[in-house]
Image (cartoon, one colour):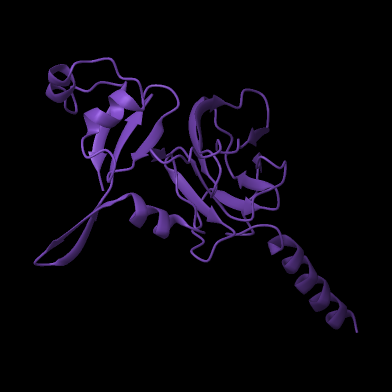
Length: 213
């Protein structure tokens, strides 16, 4: 009877140890990062990198790490960063969080993920595509042509505010065939066509970038 009880207790302890984490359950956690989305809830799926280690939590392609484990509220660490450490958190349909932080004397951090701004959607431009109507919207705005490979669709875009809060402006390429026309008439760019046309990456600087897909 005592042997049977001991086996049951061991199984129960093992289940408890693995219930809220992914990874090796015999590694002691000494620091924690709590992650909440814009609704103040732990995301159902997220990617976190701490220094040079990375984990995917809550998704089909879960990736474990030696010193980082997924937890019910974010991640746990088997080490305590003694100095500053680079942290990157990615959550679908939310802003990415990226910063170099210091734990100091604390054993936990709280990271709040901000929601993405509402997409601009006008006859001239959109600043993002949703999984609901993204393909149809892309085909509507893209310039259509044909080649020996078949149908081709080209959608031009300009990225502004690269040094602060970047915004991707996908221009209605059927209406604005040139980047300059869109930049001047829609975005209010005041440069001359010669000045605008002479600037190309990396000389474009941190103010913006233009390209097409």
